Every structure is written in C-alpha cells, then in structure tokens.
Length: 161
Image (cartoon, rainbow, N blue to C red; front, side, top):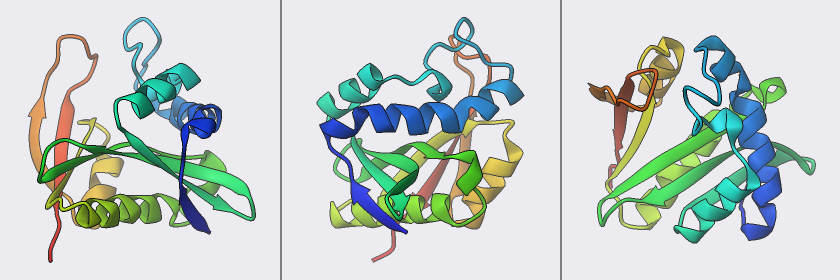
C-alpha cells in the first residue's frame, strides 16, 4: 500500500471515497440530507474542490492502483492541525489502512511544525473513539451543536519530538 498527496484533479475520487465510506455511519446514526446535510456521506466533488480552495490537503491510500481510502489535513494555527474525513472503503477496513492514513497526518503535521492533531467524532460512536484512543489520541470535551443531531467528542494527539 502506498499513500500519495492528492491534488485538485482528484476531487471526484475523493468525493467517491468519502461518500461511500461514510454511508454506513449515516445509516447507523439515522443521518440524512435533512437532519445533517454536511455529513460526509453526502460529500460531493464541489465540496472537495472547496476544501482544496480553503487550503485543506488530502492523502489517498491505494494498493496496486486501487484506491482504498483517504484523509484530509487542515492547518488550524501554528501548533494545531485537524485530521478530517478519514474514510476507508468497507472492503478495505480492518487491514490497517485507516491507521496508516492517521499516521500520515500525524507525520505531516509534525513536518509542518504542529504539536497537536485534533479530530471531532460522533460522541456515541464508541468503537471509533476506542480505536483513536488505541492510536494514542486522548478524549477531550464533548459538545452539542444546535445544527447537528448528535453530540461531538473531540480527541487530540500530542506529537512528541
């Protein structure tokens, strides 16, 4: 498996990877276009294009030319980055793809002088929270947002020198 930095020509592929990879989450948590129109399961190429224009960067994992998943990196400030839209196609899950994509963002964050990587997840998605904790992330605050039908839990990873 190799991971490469995506460019604007990859917006269609990124939209497919993010959308398909998050459909099961939308079903599990009863999310739809009406109660959560910005959920990644509804991700489009225009959304990806907008992310690139805002400075977000994507990495795509592939094996033998077959895309398996992707992740987005966003610089929040001088010391903080966000890990966004970690997405692995169902047939490639539980093979270390997600972990390698997370490690790529951590490595890229360190290279860019960051000391913390942050992520927000659905607070009730216990298995995902436990998976991130196993990778070294630490639970932070949980917040409610009026526009979301779920609470958001924040986790962070402290980058060591």
